[in-house]
Amino acid sequence: MTREERRHQLARLIQEEPFISDRELAQRFGVSVQTIRLDRASLGIPQLRERTRKLARMAYSQLRSVGADEVVGELLEMELGRRALSVMETTERMALSGSGVVRGHHLFAQANSLAVSVIDASQALTGRARLRFVKPVRVGERVVAVATVVRQRQGRFWVDVESRVQGEPVFQGRFLVVVPGP
Image (cartoon, rainbow, N blue to C red; front, side, top):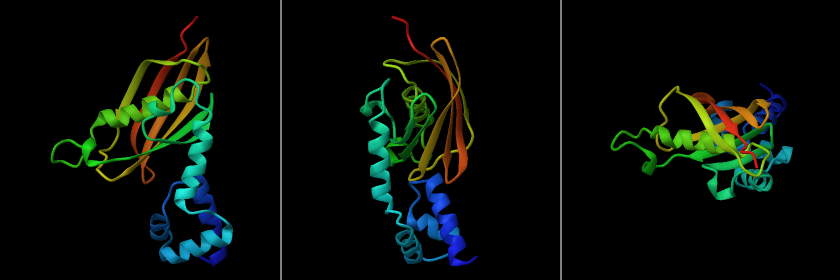
């Protein structure tokens, strides 16, 4: 792969996964971290911390149905009424004792808060959830959740949420989110 091809793919990958680290990019492309840093610099792409801050500021400013402190994980993208994305860094406190496996309610909390936050209303409540835990999540892994509004009718919203770790699905849910009447 030429340097130009790598840089083109790098830019596309960072656009799809804006919170991917230089180390992860280096592993995916089979080059050094320094090469990734040089590629980013030549493309004018800021480092991870700055990309994350910028995305978070924009996303949190759009919240309506929940407060910023009610979103589990860090909100990075928000298109009210359409799509939202959050990232959750897993810790030892989230794990089952001695196993290193993150407890399911943390994955649910991230997905549920994201499903409710994507609704363009002053208040929204979870009415129902159908869940599937696909694969265990280990302590230290970064969980990326994407919520997509797939249908809406008369104050009812069906929101699909898929959570991934390094691109692999770990959790899927369909949430019925209801906007209460006056």
